Image 1 (spheres, helix red, strand yellow):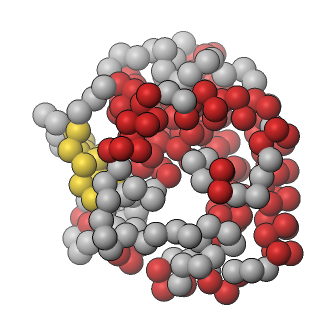
Image 2 (cartoon, one colour):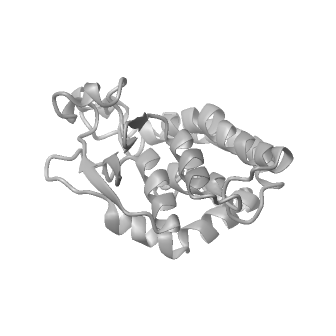
Length: 217
């Protein structure tokens, strides 16, 4: 049975999953879902939190993007992407966990006052923070401190795994943020390598579009 991905082109978590699906050459059906208050009626019956993405494989529904990455790689027997051996798997898992638990909150803090600052609050943005350079500088410094630590999680990783799918997708907004990646050489190299893969371009082309989407500045 074909996979179904509930998707939105502005969801960086969905980009992670599209990236891996393209890397695997795995066909799937894409269902566009509006973000936040634009999600369609009844979507909460698919995803208990009403967020994007969700992945359906027959009677299996998955709601967490990192779980989807692990599942899809294991489903296809790709130990090179999701190692089966405990030690090798641990370094991949801890990088993905650190990305979600530490990097993501700090990243959103900066995105909120830059990329999403002009989106009205009723659509999930914070237009009151627009144009506050002191707040932007503070959030950028906080993210920088987290990325200083995140570098240590990247050093032991194999060349390309599902962790790279997660990192490339979740940090897809970095080129639009006031950050200089030369401060974090491991991160810069991994992002450059991931974004250069044909599967990354393929996932961008596959992202569903809708005129009603929230369009960040």
